[in-house]
Amino acid sequence: MTPNLLDHDADALAALFASMGEKPFRARQVLRWMHQRGAASFEDMSDIAKDLRAKLAQGARIEAPAVVGDDTAPDGTRKWLVKVDGANAVECVFIPETDRGTLCVSSQAGCTLDCAFCSTGKQGFNRNLATAEIIGQLWMANRLLQPIREAASPRPVTNVVMMGMGEPMLNLDAVIPALRLMLDDNAYGLSRRRVTVSTSGVVPGMDRLRDECPVALAVSLHAPNDALRDELVPVNRKYPIRELLAACNRYLERAPRDFVTFEYVMLDGVNDSDAHARELVAIASQVKCKYNLIPFNPFPQSAFRRSPAERIRAFARVLQRAGLTVTTRKTRGDGIDAACGQLAGDVADRTRRSSRVIPVRELSA
Image (cartoon, rainbow, N blue to C red; front, side, top):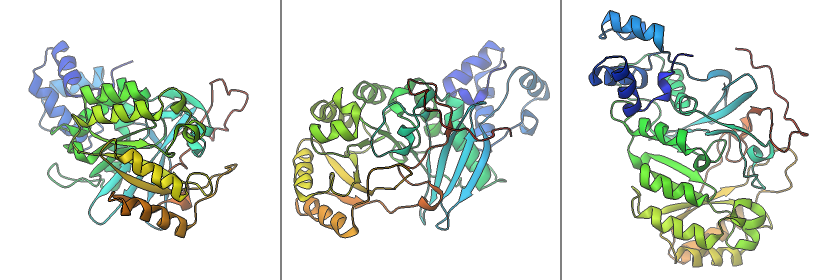
């Protein structure tokens, strides 16, 4: 099969062009056409020589995942279901704000980590996404949100969060090239502070990302002690909180921000007491951080309930009185199952849970 140019960051694309006998600036031109102007065809690349366009048309392709579902919530949140192969589709979500547009991107079809409160984990895991399938979500979103644009015009997506389906740290071979494209001035030109990777606490991946492509870091904490976190976030049994905090401090040595964001889903009667909040204060004494409280977003067969609004406010007050920065995430897109923890997509589960196959809707384009 011909190479998909969306799979290539700048260095890989330059190497591919060199193997074709082409100069590096040609690779940069194509990079700009693909990612800045959203070109899907080599014929659209008007300032590239016709013979090169013909060569590329015969020996390469530009192919992003196909959109098979498109829903918009009353608050403007937009969710796409994108087909990645004959058996799998994943979801990505655009969240518009007055001063920014944030795209939540998936990195895997399903997830291996099975966090207790997350819909994605309940469907099991099928496979990692390729770089083209990750960056293709951003490429696709910019095209659909602003179909016709000049290279110099602002792109709708100003921020990217790797908080969609999957654990990014378990797919870094594909995630890191995608991140490099997000940061590349010849592609999307986002600052490292505007690109955030979220992890449930996969320590080796955190160390690798720190060394190869440090961007803003969010950690799905969700519990203040190992006993409770072992139940809510099973990866904690392998990388307990002490090891996780040490990895956070190592990451901060190279991070674009001087703090880690700890995500904390608020589960009624489970992790939302004042005593739990005081334990989080103790954690904050060990690593520079801010807390983002996330009202739980329900999904079918979930055993949890969202903490009442007053309980969330009281919990936040405990943290604020200790001098910590605390935000409470505004729930967006829950009417179309696009809120945090609700992304499920359509995945034929081929893992050890294969006895419980998730139904796959018709994916023919």
